[in-house]
Length: 321
Image (cartoon, rainbow, N blue to C red; front, side, top):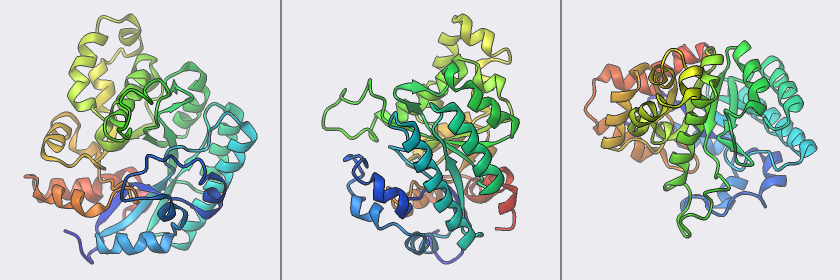
């Protein structure tokens, strides 16, 4: 399990570059996990991340931004913050090319800026994919306003990592409970459902979507979504191959999704090849989830696929890990 043998590829691993944090620390939400205060985020460094990775057998962490991201309704700020974060992410990978990758951040509400940043991040910085949040100002990813961005990502056959963000409509539904408890898993499922409803998954078949935290509650609700969606014209018209087919093409990570009921649901719904190891570091300590993965009854081959080989198939440059 945890130890010196570096075998895991972590697709849900957060970077907090200094240049980004200097400007953004005042906006970092007060609902951070109890074990991760702002000081730990402000003082993040690749070297500190590597200490944890080495102790937990994590060979490579593919960094991504977390909520609150870079979009606050200010186009120039979003472009500056995206560029700063992406360039710092690229520097981390350049310094430790076998230990890190990164999903570049963009701000989809700024279509022109997002398209330019996709080009720069993928062509110049050599990002491993693009990282998105589940909604922007309450607008879910399937909204037609974001279609030009997804069309470009599809043209490039991009890997897209989607992390939940608090939706303004649900922010105060359960006062006193941080959104990671309930709202994040449901927000992820809303984002997926919205993409299916608007036909983005069908229109963009060459995007490989990874959804955080076991794809929220999708494995539990997928049959219900299909049953209800089968009587909704937009669902049917936009998914001629069927709703279930569209959903089962998605990938998910195991961050905060390794309890016995969760793993059972993931393995029963998704193809095994579409389940990827994720830690959610530094918000979550990797050890307990890794222990859960090793306690769950599955073959060694299946466990190795989840922890490493499925990611290698998705990211060919990591094939040698």
